[in-house]
Image (cartoon, rainbow, N blue to C red):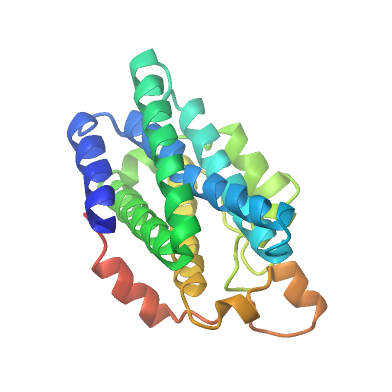
Length: 240
């Protein structure tokens, strides 16, 4: 069922936007950030009802949504949202998937995280293919200002917070060209995959800490560790 839901999303986006990459990425990023909204909504509900108080889960998922927002802003700066039909499709699809993931997360958080893992794996594959096929073209174009502010010149606290399987201030990507921007977005998606894998581990409920929280505890592991080998296996089997 989960692979079917992701497969429908992938099929529609791939067919409609085969030759319109920036519009395709705009739709993808509009939808990709919505499950993090779903996670946050349910976590806030549970805390309001006195069932859970998971501050670090809230911090990491908000940081992930903040990262996806900037991916979206980058695509908008490249003209991805120029046509109303693309905005309508993206926002309508996002609304549908928001409620789907809310229901999934309330019934089975692990299933909801698996759903998002598949979405992020597809996003990683999509961007990886794009940068390999358009490397020369992308290297000849400047990075959008919004990307420079997010990856280099702005407050990087939230950027570090979504690197949830690492430690703060260890990843500072280049952003000298549009190629660098898309490489950074691709690598961001792999970080999201790591987080979704870690959230599905049996001991995640006990060990889940945001990077800055963990740094204060002076420990190395932030989440139940996801190795590069685990990530490689998942990306190889990801939906295409």
